[in-house]
Image (cartoon, rainbow, N blue to C red; front, side, top):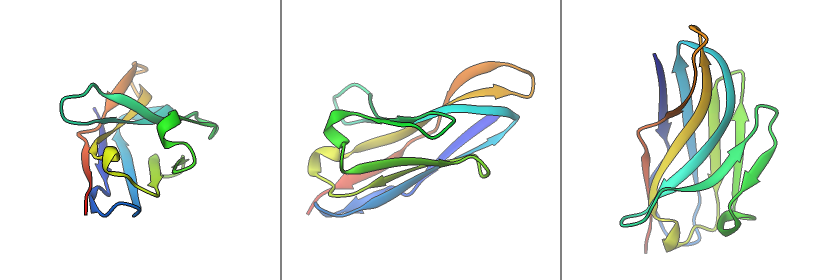
Length: 120
């Protein structure tokens, strides 16, 4: 069994910053590409940023130059540093990871999500 647990969400004023974390644990043999997605009320879930096992990032256009994705493979942890936050960044943020389990099963796993609200 694999678990992804996000943390770090909350309420922040426009222009502020937050740092999200996603801790992967359980029957993990190998942790592959990871990413952050978000879903605002009434909208579809969308990709925010992703990162390869080797640390190469890729960003959605609307967060480039404001968000930074990173990972610590020694801790099985994914991060998202969010700066210059805007009200339109308000959403539930989800972590996704591609994982090979100790039973050699490969699949994509999702966290439960963490709420980010940008408002004055």
